[in-house]
Image (tube, rainbow, N blue to C red):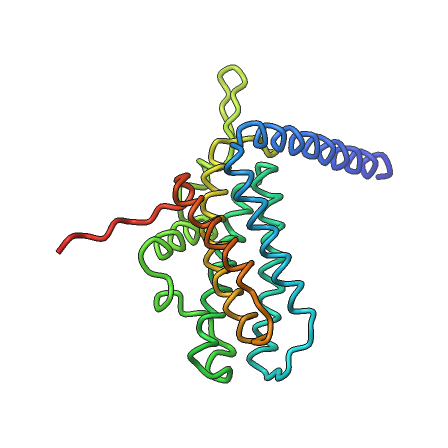
Length: 238
């Protein structure tokens, strides 16, 4: 029995070491493929998120239950945002997709808090259909298929390995071109969140000037659109 346990521990440690090494390789490959513009967008988004959340450390004059709940949701979103960053760089794309779906639901709930009473929302899941429409609705549907294991896209996000005649899915994370598509999706979601967060802090701290943050956010968004990271559908001519 003792030998059996030692074997289990050794296998678990070996697998973890192999996975950690694979993630480091995936990160290096992602960064080599990432363009200077994409890196600028990523750094700007992360910087804006951390800078704006730091503003909420200051005292808010009037804090009600809605604001308190919003602050909780915002904190949860930000912690998850950086986990998603790591997952995408590490090649853990299915895991990143599941968390991006959670982020969209958080954004929906933040928007619902602006128009509905807290009592009507507690105990109910966010009504994504009322908020996420157009491109955001399509993204949510895509991510839901992955989260619920109802989509073939899961297979596309896991690397395939070949060993002679044997073909199977890799049990360790590896770099994939899909990581950059995932990064585009997370960038789209992050902008959605940032515009809402900026509006929140402007309302909570009316005496403070947030124009510098606003200018940076809009300029970064413009760069993302120009780069093709964010696709804005053209309006149909009447």
